[in-house]
Image (cartoon, rainbow, N blue to C red):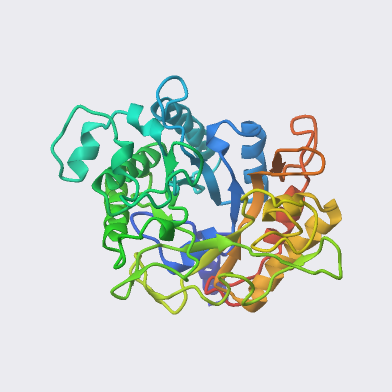
Length: 411
C-alpha cells in the first residue's frame, strides 16, 4: 500500500506544474489559470516593435519566469502608408512573436488598441475580411478618419494635431478596431488591452458597442488564435465594464496611483481610496470565461503619461508622483529603493487586495528624467544592455518566493 501511495503521489507531481500554477489554455481560461498569468505579468512596451534589445529581453523573460508580457506591441497613431505602415510592421511583429514562443510557448503576448486614431488611417486600405466580419458590403477603399471621432468634436486633437478620441458607437471605428484586433491575433498575440475604454463610450451608455467589439474579437480568436482565445482588458476608473450582469472584460487594469509622502522626499506609497485607484473596487459578475466572481482579478502597472511643470517636486496635483509619471518617478530612485519598492508593492497588494496583481516594470518610456534617459528597462546592466536599471533579479526573487494561492488569497 505504501508503494502504491508513493506511485500515485509521483504521478500527481508529474501532472501538476512545478510552480503550482496552471498555464494551460485552449479556447477558455479558468479563474485559476488567469490568476496564474497575472501573477507573472511584466510590461515590455513595444518589445515586438523594435524597442530594446530583443534577444536580451527574451532571455530576461525566460530567466524571470514571466508568463504575461504586457504592451508588447501597439499603434499610437501613425497608421499611414510607406515603410512604417502598420501592415509592414505586422510582418516583423509576427516573426518576433514566434521567437518568443519558441523560448516559452506558454507566454501570452499582449497588444494594445488605444484611445487614439490619427489621420494616417486615411492611407490604410480596409481588407475585405474586415468588411465581411462586420456584415458590411466589401468596398475598395481606405479607412475614413472623419467617420471615427465624436460627431460633436469631443476629443478632437486631444493627442495632438490630426488625431482624435474614437467613438465606438460609429461603425467605422468598430471596423478599424476589428482590423487591429484580428491583425494582432494573427501575429501571435493572445491578449489585447483596449486602453481608456471609458473615453470612447460617450455614445455607448449601455455598452452595446463595446460588447460587440469584444465579442467579435473573441470569435475571431476561436478560429485564428494560437490557443483559440484572446484575453481582453482595459483601464477601468469606475471599476469595470458590466452589461446586464456580465463582465465584458477578462480582467481589469489600472495605474498604480502612487501617493507622495511629503515628509520623506521622493518616497511613495500605495493607499486604499487614494485618487481614483482601483484597490477594492474591481467589479464582479459573470466573467467571459463563464465563472462568477465578487471582484474580477486585475493588474496595476507603472503608468507613463508625461511630466509636470516641475519634475522632481511634490504637490503638483493630479496623478503626478513627485512631479513625474509613475514609471519615471520609479526610475529616478536609487537602485536599492527600486528593489525594495517592488517587494513592498507586491506585499501590499497581497495584504490589502488579493484580487490585484502587480505588473512588474520591464520596459517602458520615461519623461523628464534628470539624466535625459528616455527608457526604463529592468534588464541587468551588462555588455548587451549597458544602461539596464537592474531589477531583473529582484523580480525573479519575488516570483520565486511567491506562495500566493490561485484563489487570490494569501495562505
